[in-house]
Image (cartoon, rainbow, N blue to C red):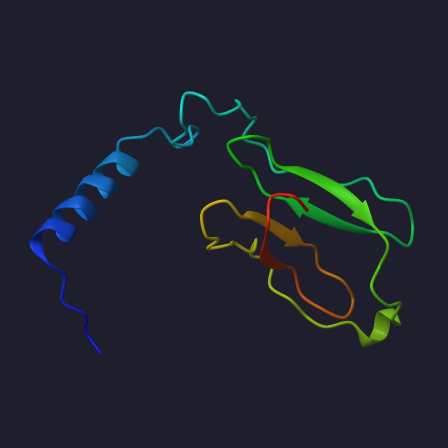
Length: 117
């Protein structure tokens, strides 16, 4: 179904789109109090048997990668087929986006977690 928007919400949405489109591609819209982060995607150099987890960028910290033990071992021939699209979060304010890397059993996915985790 279609959702009708009021004029003020359409005006705010168009202003937001204009702000995004006027921002250079290599610059993220950030608050002046936020940490400055490089625009490269974090990668892992995990030991054999570990999985890479990408922690999404927040205002307080840059995106980074950590190595974690795998959930369950599986035979390579039984691995699932996944797209190479990077998962994204739609977290509520105050939550962190955590990207769980692809394993043999599951595709990469993103979850929202409290900032204390």
